[in-house]
Length: 228
Image (cartoon, rainbow, N blue to C red; front, side, top):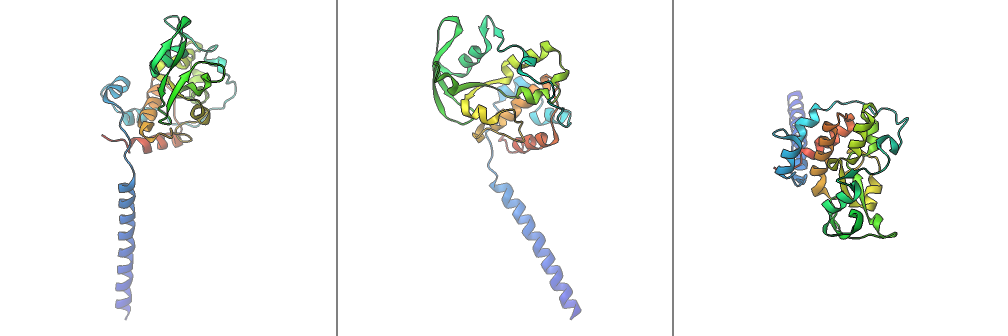
């Protein structure tokens, strides 16, 4: 009798293990793959390395206090590239069918928004310009709390105006992101998440910034689902 009970317990234990394995396997199969980072961008950011390799090289620490942070710690507004406002340079880079007027001002164009996947027709104007905003991929407040306060004022200004750290995006998506890192906000457009996280890692590598543990884990979760 005792032998029969023991045998039943062993069978039940094995059954539970099998169910657990099947659940994990099913979960992995159901996880959608994300669009990969184009090879040319991967090469541009990291050479022969990978985003995951470079992420693992970043220091992992907690956030430093936000004390002392202001936008002016990163320069007084937009800088200039070849005499043009950085904002206009990024608009001209990221919009298609753009029309540019005097003073390098982008008057109109079409944005295939990377964050939402929407097509946005940009028209410069008091009530319309805000529909397309320039996002700091690594938010300046986030950068400040993860090492930028240790940079020189010159390097902080470079960070704020570096095209690597700038993307034209749908205004509301930019507002929703705020100063979040990857653990708190990712683009609603899932096919851009690999590029987004990879770009954040590239910026943090370039400017010697660190990541929090939660941010690193969120980034790993994205990168592990990238196709290719």
